[in-house]
Length: 364
Image (cartoon, rainbow, N blue to C red; front, top):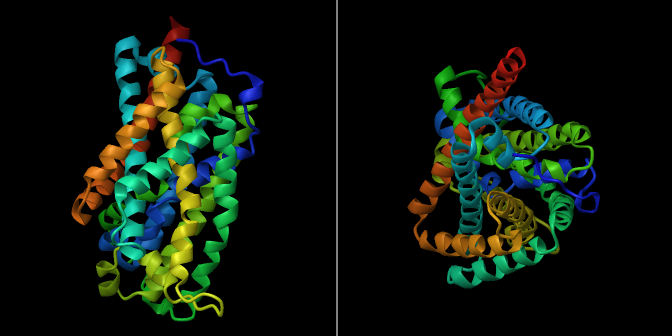
């Protein structure tokens, strides 16, 4: 199967990959990933977060190696490596994974708004309005999605400065002793932090829309490193601010630290933070839903616009079915597990399979 031919007028500059990668990674995960990681790695959880992040730099490198050799997208890669039927099945699984990410992001954000701001918020109405905004962005094509990603990073970036407030109350001795946990506990901490880094595998889908994609590699690595830096700083600050017992009882640790932010012109800063976070969630949803719609477009003769509408309806209905905190937590856990195996097992497997197949083809 040949790769997609994308006209230059639909492509974006390589530097925008920095924002595409970073914006799809920083979503709802940063609001409460600390509790899950510290459950296993304790005060060494920041090492697990850092190790997980740095290991994914290698995965991004492998993705670029795969795609530079393929000269296409994930759909053509699957069919060229595994054939029409198996490749098509694998592509459908990848599309389902992107949709699951969209469901997870939307439902978790709705829960945050309900718990912290409006307990009686109708999730159907809120989800419908938000997804209509997503559809409006997607109707403009990938260039609009890239622009939304840019603004989704730049405008709410001031929220990083909110990590300064907990520093005045932190006990950084709680970070000691370092390496106080076994390798297995650290590994479980890495798995717990994986949801925070998911999303960059959409590179497989949108790389053909990048001008001179080989030049975008360093921007992809840079966007991911910014994510690693932010998550590591947030984790260190959280461990210093909360006691271990407090942290295990705190679902939204990042939001809780916002409550101590004191400014002369605002009393409840977490309200501003959650409202601003909509600008972070928007590109997150746009990229994953665009990737799913693009995958369906490549697998069938359905236009991407017609493929997007059923996806949005599916996400709205599915996200609204999760009513209780336990079910939403399970949704996050399963999405995290699938993403972990997709990133750490499937991507290296595809790299090795492509390498072996190319060697066999040359020798034959």
